[in-house]
Length: 267
Image 1 (cartoon, rainbow, N blue to C red):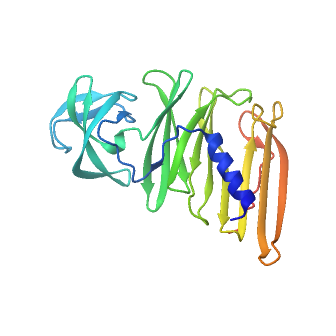
Image 2: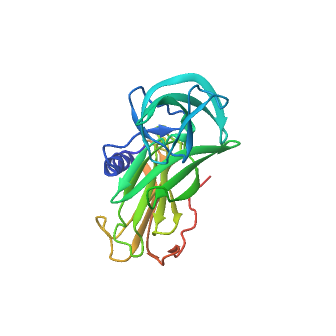
Image 3: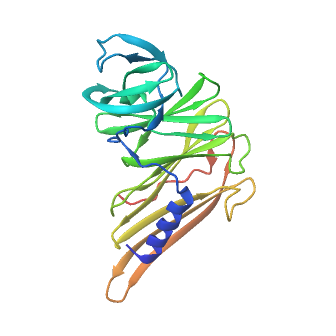
């Protein structure tokens, strides 16, 4: 991987924030960890089984403490999930891990909760944004890399948007897709607006996409700046590389970003 690309990815990770949480399909909650419920009216049971007695119902975004992970598992939404012994404000019992939010982020009075599902080999992220204590909107988007983190911000200077939610992929090995997804919440719907890619195959090939919003450094009022670079190494001995940079100024019309950016990544 060339030095310019390494520096770019390092800076990009720093820009995403230092307090992110690494998440994946195999994420396991730790003993003593504070977590929040993703599901609503989830049955708290006295044993790690759907055949056991129900102790109470847990609400979406309810705070819980993980006591320990059980050896019992059950498939839910296409994923084999562990049962967890947890402590709530009303007592102690068991819930299925898939019904606990993998992470929770907030912006202002908005709260985002996430969970995963699988359909065959395809992995999807379920994102819920709470409009009120129990009212929420949900988005389900396919993930193209299994390790990621999440972040919620304001509208970054865009009109008619209350908050932007970002899913950031972690691609620690060359040839694995990085990049991520931007979801926009306008107060009524939570919609996927942007998929972006950052990928490199050793120092042979790289393709980097970036979206710069109005409030970002280098941003333009009322516009979204799209930048990409695609390049390859032609010859090692003479350090011969060739690259092509693209820059376009886009606009959010309240429903989508125009003009649309065609996929450029080579397969």
